[in-house]
Amino acid sequence: MSATQRLQARFEAALMPNYGVPPLALARGEGCRVWDADGKEYTDLIAGIAVSSLGHAHPAIIDAVTRQVRTLAHTSNLFVHEGEVTLAERLLTLLAADGRVFFTNSGTEANEAALKLVRRQQGGSRPVIVAAEGGFHGRTMGSLALTGKESIRAPFGPFGVEVRFVPFGDAGALAAAVGPDCAAVFLEPCQGEAGVVPAPAGYLRAAREVCDAAGALLVVDEIQSGIGRTGAWFAHQVDGVLPDVLTLAKGLGGGLPIGACIGFGPAGAALRKGDHGSTFGGNPVACAAALAVLDTIESSGLLAHAAAMGERLAAGLAAIDHPLLAGARGRGLWLAALLTQPAAGAVEAACREAGFLVNAVQPDAIRLAPPLIPTPPPADSFPAAPPPALDQLAPPLATAPPHHEAGCPPISSATTTCPRPSRRRCWTWPTP
Image 1 (cartoon, rainbow, N blue to C red):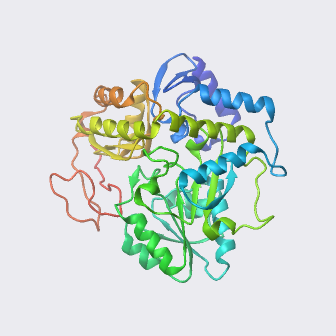
Image 2: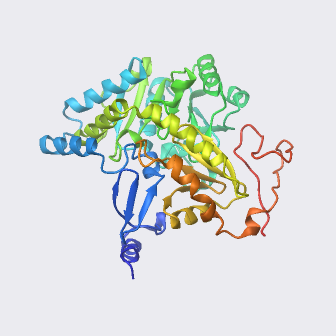
Image 3: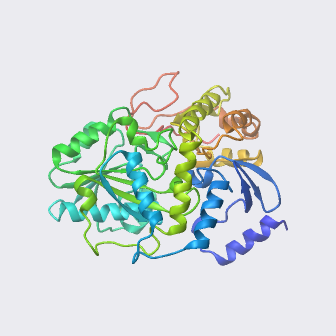
């Protein structure tokens, strides 16, 4: 039995079965590379689900965390420490907006805080929240209620939140759903768990206008897309839109757990003393790591690097002539390699065998969210590797014709993605 197998057996015996048994046991990392418990090396194109912005064992994070632990590791929310104040000020500067910050431990907690903020500001006369089909906002009960994926939401209902779901990217459907009973609209600029599906051009601006007209708050969830992932500090900035509430997590801590709920204008002062709290939110060590992440992204020019490398990686994937691949979508170093059939699980396994860690986020989409750091350049190495890995799959899987679902517009022989604007590709494939 290998070292990995031994650890997997212990995992299965000691941990709850909600994750299944992970296929790898990782032992260490450096930059964009990780090694498993048996010493095999991999290029990490997942980065802890868009978390490890600076890769593994980055000196800036090591130094910041070490200094902070030696000084003050925890304070609770009963006391103030300079790191949380500095981090809040820094985020507001990057956002160029007047606001207030509440720190959490994770993304789902940031969205829970946003829900309470909305309730406090809007009162009880507006019971409805509008969210998008395919969206993902977390797994705690409030944020799960907003998550537009029926398979993970339905087993845990009913929820204490009335949510009206609309097709993502359909501005007309959004306008029709937001009325005087709507307290807020929760949206992602790009739906990560749905397969890295960017909002159509103008969609966030339309959402801003719809919310303003109806008196609803616009909450933008940038838990995956924020902190440089798309080549901008925050994805909504590209659209020239300021939400009422912004939620962040993942890449902010560079591997340490931290999230943030940021309210702008009146929303920044909606929560009153005693309304909400978090024992570990704004923890000194996590704040030190987050400040190191922001400093390094800025000083190393990683926003421009993420934008350039993302374009290069997408172009490299688009240039691959393989019947199983259909290009890429996304922005910056947050992409999905698109498949012509629902074979993502097999592709993930084949890439892992070839030394690349990727994420089968949807049956026909492989999520790529490598660290933002320059080396080694996955934009060059990964596009050269998939074809040999994919050729291991059964040839019939790469040649089956697509079948459109009912209700979708017609397709032509040149169509590679379902043209229905509110849906990711929806083709189904017969069993070979």
